Length: 202
Figure (cartoon, rainbow, N blue to C red):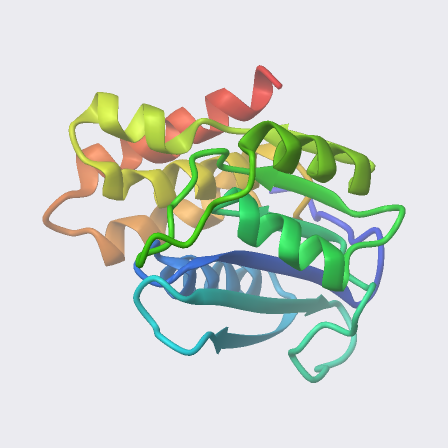
């Protein structure tokens, strides 16, 4: 495999969503793949007041040379993978900058208790305005076509790897999928490949 380089060192990736979407799983898999590629990696997961349904943000810091503290400084994200649109916008407000790239699953997760959800079109417009480049990936929609909404996170993983924004080869991710999903490998590989396919159409 060819050696991939970093646009910035350290390079800051944020994966954000709500509890139950699989942030922590994705951050662990991405971190392992980066280690296998020879990078220094630190990962930190931060949770809202409630884990399921509350905000979850995973910070992944990548370097060729040093190990850094994990949490991203405000205004210093390079890529934000948003598993939920409002959480994507919230993290853009904290960690965004004129050069940040976002990959977003535009399917909302509505809060419990009747709390109003912002207009989705306005949220998407704001994400576009705050990002130098935005890729909307209909991961939940595609996962439902596969028969299980849980595949949305692996579709997003495939989109992240296929985007080329991170120094990860597909070949580094496949063994991790094989180890993590021994009993359900075929559909998860299908979801991963679907994500790689979807990002190319953006």
